[in-house]
Image 1 (cartoon, helix red, strand yellow):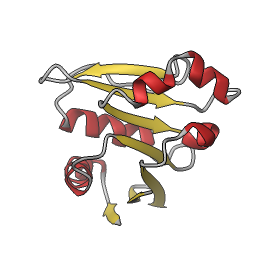
Image 2 (cartoon, one colour; image 1 turned 90 degrees about the horizontal axis):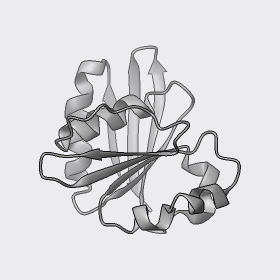
Image 3 (tube, helix red, strand yellow; image 1 turned 90 degrees about the vertical axis):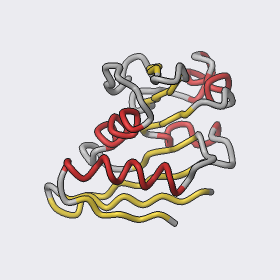
Length: 140
């Protein structure tokens, strides 16, 4: 189990490094948290840590964004907040992304729970104070 409290946005880089170090062989991360908890901000920081210089934004309407890294690998960032059903995820080629071997970071994975592979890292972000977050992760 991974757990870290960050008390400012400036500490997210260290938290991202520690999360990736805690799960070095994992590529599929499901992010849980309330609206405004910081899921997108943390994913952006993780992508930067992995070497992406792309413009990283929440794919709220596109469902998935692809970012490139310095090592020419891809990172896939999903946002299922607006999805109506799991068929929409399948229509964008969800399985192809998830089983590509590349990093996949998912916001609002509870919307497609039945499609999630059994071997993922669940990351939960909880607001402690307006500027502090408790980030916990566990491989399921």
